[in-house]
Amino acid sequence: MDVTYLSDLERGKWNPSLAMIVDLARGLKVHPSDLLLDLQVEQADATEADDPILPERKRGGH
Image (cartoon, rainbow, N blue to C red; front, side, top):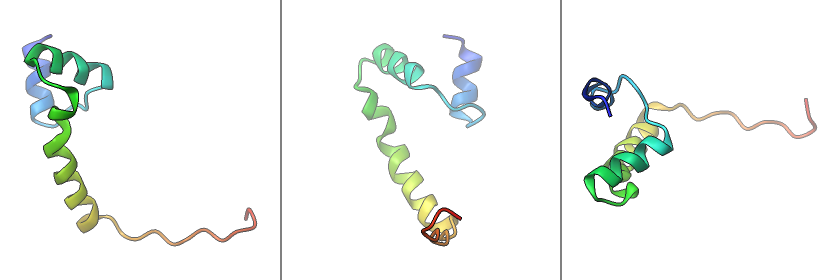
């Protein structure tokens, strides 16, 4: 894996694919979910604070 790519991942320039997360986890000898634990908490906090509530769609297809 290219160090430049890893650096870009750390800086948030790219989003890794699931396959890349699995490869990174294997290299670090951790479970893939370990790489996502902090991200899930940070993302949940950001989602609650930044995302407006979307209006509900009306039923009936239009």
